[in-house]
Length: 226
Image (tube, rainbow, N blue to C red; front, side, top):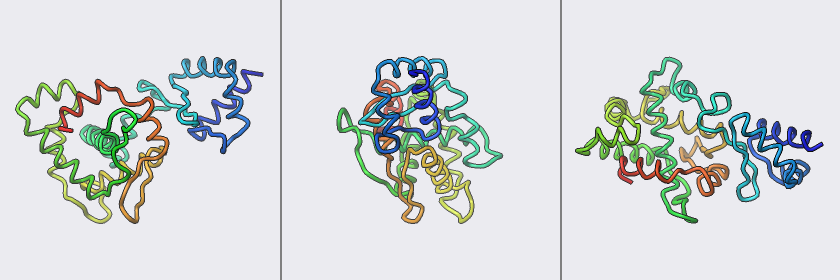
């Protein structure tokens, strides 16, 4: 019986991404059973995911090395175009990290530092941070520590036009594609009319309670000048 309950919760999380009292009362209450959670822990460990409850919401979070449920390198490349190169993957990663740092640069219980940002404002942040990082004297050592090739991204980014209708390979095009990708994964709320983005409840919970690795964040913050 506990295995059946655990499997129902697991597959619900696979399908919907999160479990709350409102979206499935029965499964949510089943999760409170310690024996059901013990079975779920085994299932999560064997399938390379983590199942966590944050602020009354239960999430299934793929581990970094999960090559089935996690975000793959090719997924990030393809959000720009199907003929995207490695640099497109790195730039998409960089935009995602910048978005996270824009919204969650606070400390402790005040980790969330702003509610929204417009696409134009995000482009300015990305450009200014790349300019700053690329101008640093010890850029090579810091790039190696952060595992980010800032110089290549800086050159690629500066070669792009700001915007051109219908084109993805512009600065705004990259940002819009990444934002749409994150919205698809329920991590952003993206208003395509107003051209602004807001962190979803899911992203806010993850950033506040679990997701940010302090050492990794400090290294990237130092490189980007936050």
